[in-house]
Picture 1 (cartoon, rainbow, N blue to C red):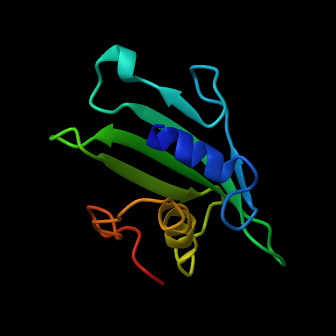
Picture 2 (picture 1 turned 90 degrees about the vertical axis):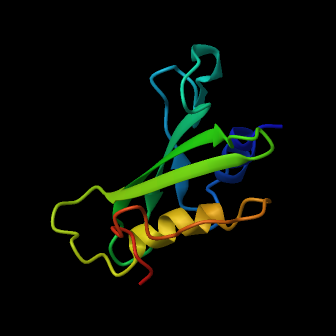
Length: 124
């Protein structure tokens, strides 16, 4: 089973906290699209929207890409979350939560950074 299947299965019923909704891809699939037939640097792309809890129900978009490691024995998952409302400059760690809630809920060994290449998604 591919990691895209794990991600899809994890989020198809609302994800780890029940507030994720998979989105349609340009390829016409819900959640994740298989790009492996196109010989690209990534194998799967996906998207979900996370709705924050009350009292303010904000929506944030989470984009994920999945690629094989260079040795072919694992996967690299890159994820990014962005607020869908202007003015969310200091989101109190919400976008960090959106990403790490998914990543840490997957059944695999996690190695890597959690603040992005540019530090744009630090821990709260």
